[in-house]
Structures are given as structure tokens and as C-alpha cells.
Image 1: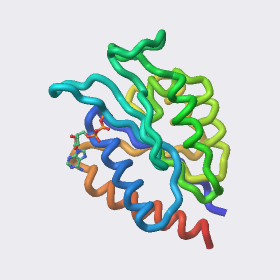
Image 2 (image 1 turned 90 degrees about the vertical axis):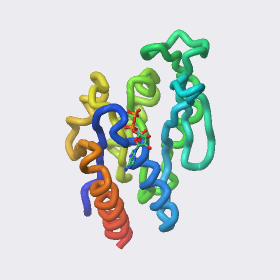
Image 3 (image 1 turned 135 degrees about the vertical axis):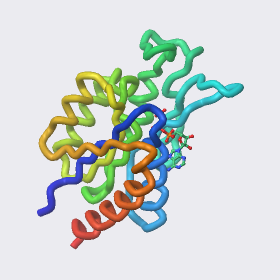
Image 4 (image 1 turned 180 degrees about the vertical axis):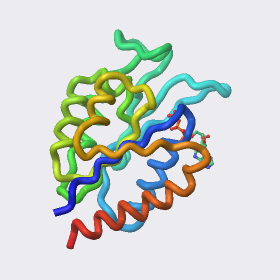
Length: 182
Ligand SMILES: Nc1ncnc2c1ncn2[C@@H]1O[C@H](COP(=O)(O)OP(=O)(O)OP(=O)(O)O)[C@@H](O)[C@H]1O
């Protein structure tokens, strides 16, 4: 049996992590592969970033964090809505079958404020499903822990390699899922 795919994409802020995950999600779905999980997008107002939204691959959205939100949890200037991580991101991380690719952007400081989210990631690391997730270059203790778990592969993205990696990754995932289904 193939080892489960456990790929963590990292790199400096703005290196293209969200873009590559959205590209993968879009193309895998077009090719008929089942994916689950979520990605995060910025909210911008008058040119500056004010917060973040969680978007699940099945089309649910919720506010992840905003500078004007009300929450006791903060990361930098953002108030983090941990209840939305629990009610929207977490259910999206339940794969319907063991061939479903779990695709997550990102396992970051905000998401890790939810203990249930961290527990879920640990259970995914034990599951037979393939996992691709982005992690910040300095993500804190939990991110360091999962990056050093057996089978974890780390890919460092930068503007010089992101085009090649994007195509290579898509090929590798499709090949993996195809072999798994044999
Ligand atoms: N392959 C690419 N070609 C051209 N522009 C790109 C590419 N990948 C990303 N970008 C651009 O770079 C910017 C940052 O991309 P993105 O949001 O994906 O980075 P990120 O690593 O997720 O950022 P953050 O650290 O804020 O999470 C965006 O404006 C995006 O359009």
C-alpha cells in the first residue's frame, strides 16, 4: 500500500501559498477528484487588509478574523472568531471516503487557536487520506510538531519555483490518487 500523502507547503508571506492551493482544488475538481477542507481569503478595504474569510470547498463561508470583530482571541491586530473555525472549517475536514484529498489553506496561528482544529489535524495525520496543507514559515509549536511527524514532506514555495511546483504537484497528486484507486 502507498504511504499516505502528507504535504506541507510553506514559504514567506505572499509567496503564493493560497494561489497554489486554489489552483490545485480547481483542477482536481475539474478532473473529477473528490476534495474536502477549506482555504482562506483576505478581506480588503480601500487597499488594506482588514480580515480573513474561511471558504470551504463545498461552498460555505464564514468570517475567520477581522480587525473590528469582537473576540477575546487575537493574532496581531485581528480578532479571531474561533467559533467559526469550529462550526465551518472543522466539518469541512471530514472526508466522505478514504480516497478524498484533504486540502487546507492554512494551518496557521489563527486556526490553531481552536483546540478542536488541532485535534482534527492530528487525527488526519493518522488517517489513510492524502493531505495537502499550507503552513506559515513560522507557525508556532503545533505547526513545528506536525511538520516533524513521520511521513511529512515540506515544500518551500517562492516566486522562482511556484510555477513549476504548481504543475509538478498537480501531476503528483493525480498520479497518487490514480494509484490509490487501483
Ligand atoms: N504563480 C503566480 N503568478 C503570479 N502571481 C502570483 C502567483 N502566485 C501568487 N501570486 C500573487 O502573489 C500574491 C500573493 O499570493 P497568495 O495570496 O497566494 O500568497 P500567500 O503565500 O497565500 O500569502 P499569505 O502569506 O498572505 O497567506 C497575490 O497577489 C497573487 O495573485
